[in-house]
Image (cartoon, rainbow, N blue to C red; front, top):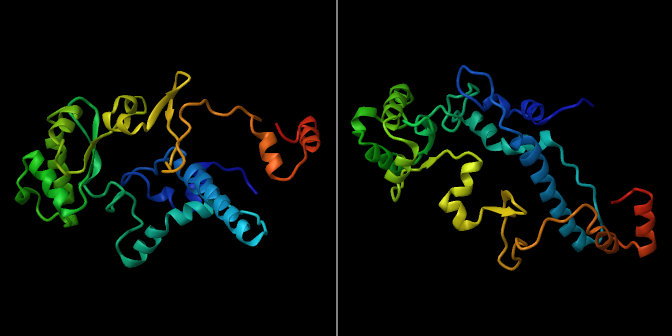
Length: 255
């Protein structure tokens, strides 16, 4: 085995090569793809599935979750799209990888950015209408030969106002235009605030628990658990007696 990190797992599993703009090196997607998406999230799903299976069968099993497997699974639609001709191996030229001018981020007059995701024709039409662009100026939405000039036209229009001015302008329009917020800016976003997506606990802003369950309220009114806080409860559920739990703790096996 060899040491690795998110970027290397995403690289060998076929994802990193497709993240970034055409003609530029691949862009590391933070460590969201392999560590959290392909690793942690799928491991958690595997554990839940194994627990449910054990309740039915009475037999446990090992959950083998490898980050490269998870990343490859996340790429499954693109593996198929490549075979069907909908997707190419050339980075930054496809519909969802910054190749399409109607699915990308653009700088505004204040240096901030808006994200545009007007994939469907009705959203694209609303985008052009909101920008005051005659559809004849940009031609057919999916004519790739016209994408370079379309990008220039959209960029020129979006560069005439600040990000927040565009957000206000597109409010109520189904044009799939959104502000590109920094982590700090999410704290003041009214939509996220209404959902309670980002909360403050002990003076520290942080994402609220997700997903949410109708019959299991999120524990937002109590602090996060401390290391070892629930060790005895978990060991008891596993069948350990109090003396055995104490011995495990004394031996440094558990916290």
